Length: 43
Image (cartoon, rainbow, N blue to C red; front, side, top):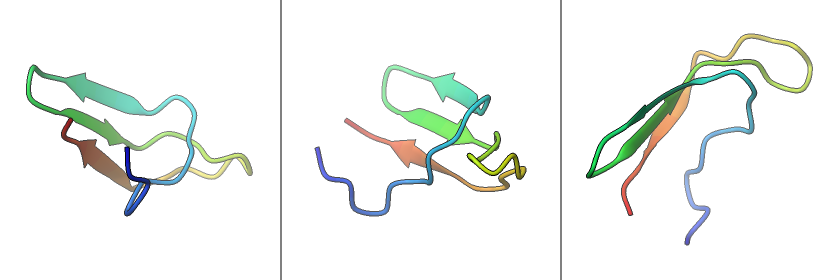
């Protein structure tokens, strides 16, 4: 699996899982700052 364009590591983000893809959005980074970013994983 390629790590190109992967979103930043996060905790407590929102995840939507479908049969075709996974969306990860928001959460907190290791400095306890809120994240307004995310990404889509298509296997």
